[in-house]
Length: 499
Image (cartoon, rainbow, N blue to C red; front, side):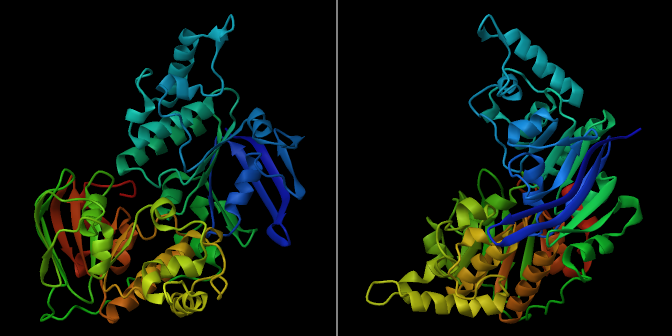
């Protein structure tokens, strides 16, 4: 039995002269799970921040339990029963589990903290979710999935009737994601209205009762999940049908010499890893959180040391002590966390794209704005970056997919022929994913050798020439191009949420 909770009508929002939301309607019923999708820039974040009280709409109405509501801040939305669980976990690592669950609402007695009441309330919140965490443990010592449980438990304290999850599984293992889905279903069974934001279509069809799609600030689809196909959802997101056929890759020449070889590489995160990479090839390294895939990729580019084994680049044995040495050896790298490890956040697109090439582009020791702009212009066209062609925008103004294209252009401008790309489509929408896949396939024709290190089977399915599968630091399977599929990857990796 579901009951109406939230009714949103005609929500509009502008920033300066740009209208971001053009009259959005949405109903959220208690006891249901609604998936909210849309490409980056579609207006999802703005809309959700309005619901959470962080932004005020320019026009439109919000009704909670049939009564008109007006949120002047986050506290107003929380008082109305609406809580947002953001992608970035906002906990206090030095405090305990119980202290974090009651963060901002610690019970007192006689003006002093009532720890007994705190423990009781925290345990009650965890029991409600069917979760078992040590209440006195420091949050800093917990796994990411456990810290997310604390965020959810905190959201249930008080009168929460609607919980918004923003990209909740972006950094979770399959086991943690399955547990999260169980918690979300349990919340819905208790009558909570769930709004679930994701880029992952498999999660939509595994979890949601209803799917709502925003495109260019308008609702382009709002229907029960059982009544739509994945293709219809994608078309609603991008405004056109998107082909999901695997990109045709030319097989590397049988006489081509490897440009990168690993012989029995080992560290504290992986052991006995051997493989080779040839020009014109995309080698997929697939594994979930804890598999060692990210650590292996970092070791190839000097961002992390390996303890044993040999790495050969262009016929020479190397042991990079710093990423700069890998760059000098013609290796470019996209890190898993582009926001903290890849972007020069206060700099322009032209400055970001040309960063490794500054010394080459400088004139008399000074950076030349004309040369930076010319470098950006080359790859702006080639990579189809949706941004000002002058490269004068700050990179944080772009969507995740376009930021990723700029970072990829960085290594193409630097002349890197070997590319190690870690989670290249994380947080990237469907349309941008296909653009990135297209670019990678075209680069192989030009002789680039590419490694994709990812926990996303869609990346491997789309463009990998062959796939290595790692589990707990061990290389347990090598899958040839013709056998790559969701089924073979998840079987090798031990199964997944989508299985």
